[in-house]
Length: 80
Picture 1 (spheres, rainbow, N blue to C red):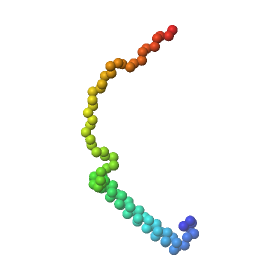
Picture 2: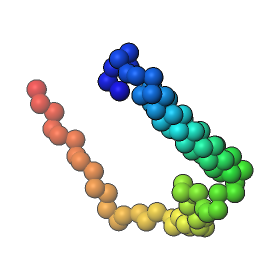
Picture 3: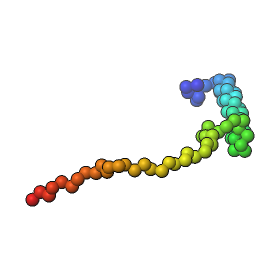
Picture 4: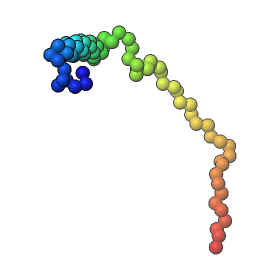
């Protein structure tokens, strides 16, 4: 199969039959995948989608607690 120009007629026929078989197998696989895509787009995937998380109620926010003392930096003395 290295040089098709030097192949005999019988060798070329074998190569063509092999390629036809591969093309038919690929066409069958494409049909399977197209059917799977169609099912998934309709929402009949048979399971839960991977990206969907179960819903849960939102957490209640508690009011902020104020500190007794503030922790701020003092302004440094001016330098001149």
